[in-house]
Amino acid sequence: MNTNNAQPNNIPQHVAIIMDGNGRWAKQRGWKRVMGHQNGIAAVRAATETAAQMGVKFLTLYAFSTENWQRSQSEVDALMSLLVDAIEKEVPELQKNKVRLLAIGNMQALPPKVAQKFERAIAQTAGNTGLTLIIALSYSGRWEIVDAAKRLCTKVLSKQLQPNDITEEEFARVLQTSAIPDPDLFIRTGGDQRISNFLLWQLAYTELHFADVLWPDFRREHFVAAIADYQQRERRFGKVNE
Ligand code: FPP
Image (cartoon, rainbow, N blue to C red; front, side, top):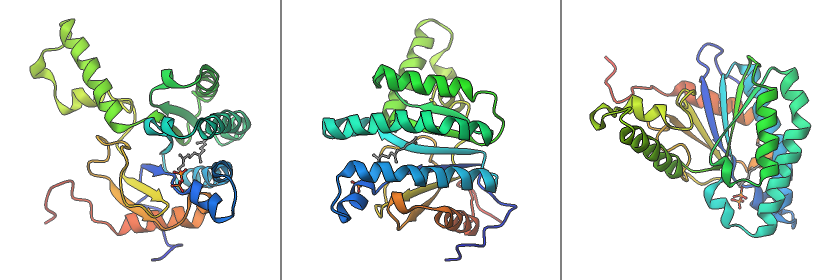
C-alpha cells in the first residue's frame, strides 16, 4: 500500500480511531500495561497533528469504553490520571493549533476530577475553529443508543413528539454525536478486526481500515496510509454507481 500518496482533494471529513494494543506493546518490553497507555500519548499527538495538517475536520478517539471499567482498579486509576495529565498538558497546544475539544460518553460515570478537567478544557477551546477533537470517554455504542431511546421516550411522554415522528434524523438528534457528522473513515490499530461497541449507529457507511501496528507506535505515516487506503474505496452508501 502506498503510504505517502494521499490526495489533498479527497480528505475524509471525520476520522474515528480505536487506539488498541497499548497493553501488548508494554508486555512485549516486559513493562506494566500502564506504560503502554503512557506511550500512547505520543501517538494521540501524532494523530491529532496529522489530522489537523491534512484538513480532517473531526477526529474521534476511543479513550475509555464502558467495558474498560472492568479492568483492574490500578489500571483504571492509572488511565484516569493519565487522561487528566494529558488534558492539562495539551490544552496550550490545542489552543495554539486552534483545536476544539469535545467529549462523548457517560461523563457522570467519571471521577468528578476527570469530568471537571474535561469540562474546563472543552469550555476553554470552545471558540477554536480548526480540527474538532472528540474524546470518547466511558462510552459505548449500545449505551449511547439506549440513552437516546430514553431521551425519545421522555419527549413522547411530555407530548413534544409523537411515536410516528421518530425518524432516523430525529433519532440522530438525541445521540451524543448530534452535532458531528458520521465518520467517513474508521481506523483500528492492534490487529483485531472488529468494531467493539464503538459508534455503532454512526459507522453504518464508514470505510474501515485496520492498521497492523500497536497504538503506541502509530505515527504520521500510518495515518497517511489509512487516508490513502480510504481514497481507493468507492463509497456507494447502498446505491449503485452508474
Ligand atoms: C487499548 O489498549 C487502549 C486503551 C483502553 C486506552 C487508550 C488511551 C490512551 C492512549 C490515552 C488517551 C489520552 C487522550 C488524552 C485521548 P489495550 O489496553 O486494550 O491494549 P491490548 O489490546 O494490547 O491489551
